[in-house]
Image 1 (cartoon, chains in turn purple, yellow):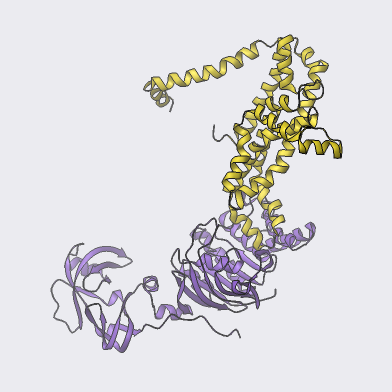
Image 2 (image 1 turned 60 degrees about the vertical axis):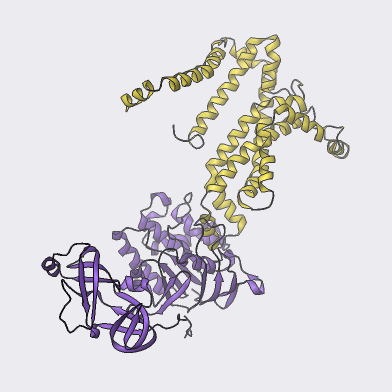
Length: 370
Length: 266
């Protein structure tokens, strides 16, 4: 397989004439090297699918440019536009989109026929691809007769069969139930390792990023808000979306040494910062009290419990006050205090348990392909 | 469920009465037609030269009209369903007009366009020696004029509602627009294309007004089944009834065949 990279820097408006309807506008820059897997995560409606559709040529971009394997495929300013059937971009759709009137074999053979292969040769190659997916016995079946996992494997075989230079996967596991998901993700992993070109996976589930990705880009409202290896992203969340994924409280404020001003409040933090800063408070580091505590903790606020739920062996309390927080405390503590929603309590956090770091400008995804 | 249905009916006597009247209104004439059929004479009626000529002519012309409707209607349906251009709504209205236009008016319009006295008809006659009026080709033209919209409206609805992303998937696999259309689009809407073809064929088979106006009523040349029924009604009403039975049977078959993919749940 001829491996190719993807480079792009563009602005795109919501898709016109797509069945999915109106997506969000996007404005981003990214580079994915040959053999590299980039996972784009983000909330629903962030523009993830629009990004893939632009690379595949299903949506035109408004300005900027996209290259696949060094070849410009879309550049409205220079009037360059390559039709999707001439792009050599493999696309696996979320709900597999197999052709319902064709057998699994003919679905996989379709792309090979489109490349000019004869019927017999295309079918033989398709059978080989399906065999490699462990679907040798299913070749004659129609998509409607396949299980969800089988259909997704056929879709992957169909996307890979014409030997595209790059591969785009839109929510590859979202349509599968939990049991099948594990097996399919293992197969996907194997095939992605073998694939030589750039791969972009779009997912609303950050777990997919852990499973497949070399690098992760967080896309929110059409813009990349965080970027890098997954471990780096979860270690230093920069947006509320990522903070929620990781399960920590994120407060944005202005650093003044060991204090960060958040709204009208001052939060005492472990490391000195200045300028626009992000404060991270772990839910388990928050203690709750009936009365204003006599404690060495520097951060003490009056709060109201607005919601509570059981989370594993902890109770999660949603607290409203001068600073909104989510706390996770032991069931014993809840029982001792007799907490019910609506209660007024005091929350305290030690400064040494509050981390803070500068809120960097939005990251670029530029790096050199080695 | 049964008692529920009975209760619904009993509590709405006026609606129920209206529905019963409607059913009787449609069923009584049909029953009357069938009851007047002279079953023992049927083979002789349908075996006569005139009847056989009419049946043969109707079959050939209506099938040609159906084929022409598909050939011309599919590109048109695609254009209306997929290409956004100014005046599309107007074009759709014009195309569908023959569905509601009195057929005799369609016949007059066709005369205006294709008779030997008209510019186009005169040119066709002088250049190619083709005369459409009073010829079987004229019958096909008249039938296509009224049948085409039935195919277009069915095909357009299907093309509009099918999942476009299937075509996008085909494009990302390297298929050019022609291959996408032949191997993905057409198969995906095939049930509706079949339904539209059957509808157009049935309409062409029953065509009367435009045919008699434009193509005339020449035995063996332009006298199709409906025209033969009309002619026989004057002289031999029992033959007219037998011929009508043929058309009724065909119509029943059309309804049964369309029930699955056009008329929705039973």
